[in-house]
Image 1 (cartoon, rainbow, N blue to C red):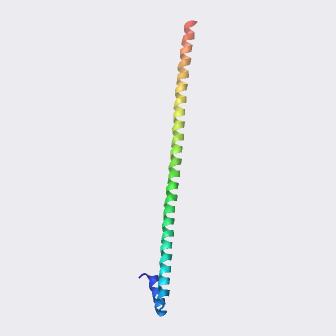
Image 2 (tube, one colour):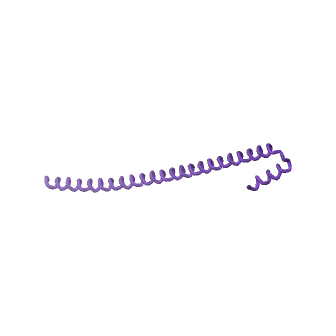
Image 3 (tube, rainbow, N blue to C red):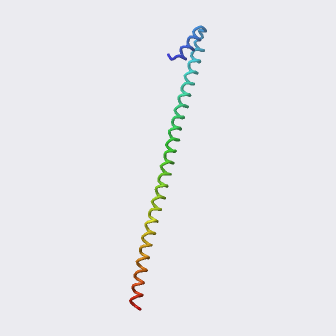
Length: 100
């Protein structure tokens, strides 16, 4: 017997009403089961909350990574466009010199 059950049992032995003892033990058992269910549900909710927080964090990381990639690609594209425009200008100048 656990500590609480022993105390209840000792108390009930002095009042040897077995129905009262059974009721008392049944009530105590149901309270313990209820407490265990509540503790389990609380643990599950805490796990779900932490997983949700982790998912949000990963989502934020992915979004930041995507933004950085887009900026890097935009910078690359702008660099390529700038070089292409410079080449285009050189070609036009060469054509213009050839016509004159």
